[in-house]
Length: 491
Image (cartoon, rainbow, N blue to C red; front, side, top):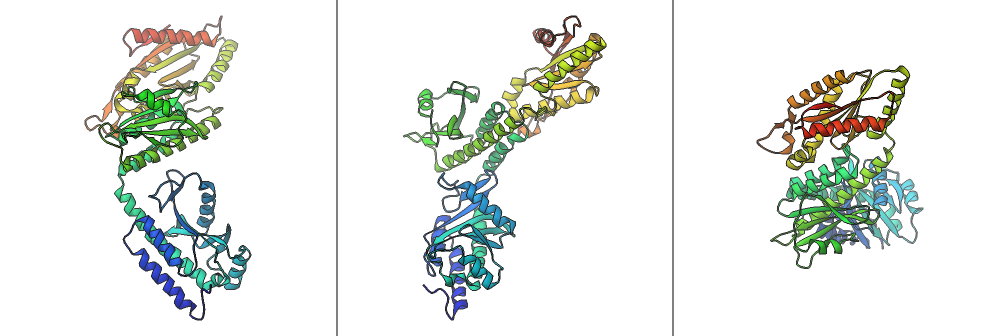
């Protein structure tokens, strides 16, 4: 089919005019793609046309023509990402044809040569950039069997460049309208889930926070999050209690679920957490007195997809940092490194015949803080306690987050009585400190106070054993708890 003849430029302008007219119509994204296809088909037949928009939350692409959904597994996200990176490097001033890069500003002979060498039997898959202020934000993918030599001249290629710009403008406007229509809190929830790994990499800690975040966003539905234990059985991790008729039946149906499922009556949705193609958990949404709307299903599908990404990244980082020494949340050394340091300090104390004291610090009623104000407030408390400890200790004292709400301190060259004084000074400073919880969105509560209980032990040089040192401090801590908390006790 002859695309350009003696009036090539007129035809090119007609093409762009028709496209501009179609783009100005107030129609849905799906209808817009069909309209764009019909304009292209005036000049050559298009087998398919897809538009994908990059989504920063999932580090992947949304299907513009399919309600902005995440494309199904048949679409190779990795390949789309590679296309995106190549075009982004040239700020949208290029396109891909059969996986090969061609610049829009090439001279005609060079342009034709570059295109021709990649085309066989006039078949072409063309990837055009979707741009916003010289930044690539998406991809236009089209396939044709009619990319003839007439399509390979500079006039038509420049028409494609202008067409891509026009389509980009329409898509960006559609995207802005779409974002405006969506509940702002949905994107905040997505962002909050994605950001969880900035403070903590342990999946056992992150997963309840995911449930809490989803629960805050979807307030008119009953949400529960279950995660599989080592035996492959679902365990409720959020909220603390959950009541629902026939819950066991829904869990049984969801054991191997890999994509979301809605009950026959439409009131209950099951959204799986998946890792490496295996079901690792489930989020159950109970509409209670209302069927789940398409909006609910869309939100939950996207949130659980983001949850899957976050958990996978967290576990990857956790494995990478398994041998590392620092606790991600508090900045103190972790349990493994602390135990290494204890053995070193015991050997030094034996060689120098010096004193060595050990204390365990436990935040009182920490579970109540989490249950009342949320785990993010709990994180703030842990971080602040660690900072107070760091400010109070000497440079050669050793502090660690031992696990959960428990901290350990090792004080070289320090007597038991002096350690007790240090413990009480630290305890009093924590008690007087006002912990800012304004981010918890509780209108009448801006800050809270907490207390800690402390158990202290001293190394017995005749029996220099870390287990004994730890158990004695733990025993003293237990006694401090029994005696009313908010106190330091020496074993």
